[in-house]
Image (cartoon, rainbow, N blue to C red; front, top):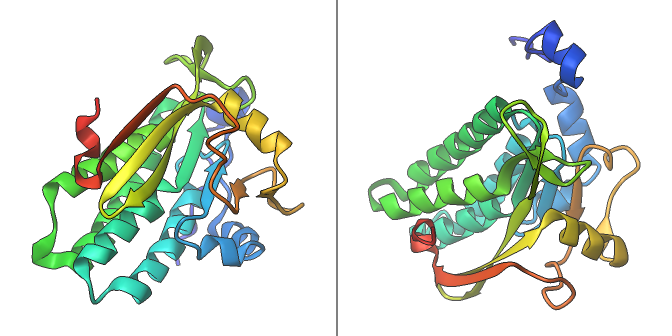
Length: 231
């Protein structure tokens, strides 16, 4: 087996402390929260996601569960694969890593989607999947909670994440929150869990974030196939 590179360059290590976690360590850490990684709707956030080593493995685990449960119904598989994808979030300082992470996650989702739905795949659903990733994997500084520019310097624009939830049938609701507000909600809630070994890498909530406890910026409600038309 070819060993995965853990650095892109010495310069990036020196400037940004960029070192990618190896696959063996990723799986070992995720096994500590194995039950959550196999819940389709359990939300995960990686505050320094790099090119997505953690998020890729989480998505693979979730899609494996979706396949076991819904492979006989392409429509049910489609909806639940979108739900799984929408539950994964990442913040990354370097824009090229953000793009790589989005592409890796989409490629994994698309391959699984086409293998199950075959001739019933829908181009609008694929556009919605890419749209979700554009909102969930963002370029920013997880310490300052602000977006960054092309030089990885903080801007005055806060990081914003979208919360996705199916509310009935094919209708999905999107609420936009600032990352700062979500952190405030999480710090005051007893519903957020972590492990000592994994909490510096990834965090997750075992329940849907309480929509009444934080201010949201915008709200949209639409068919999940039309998400990409929101903006």
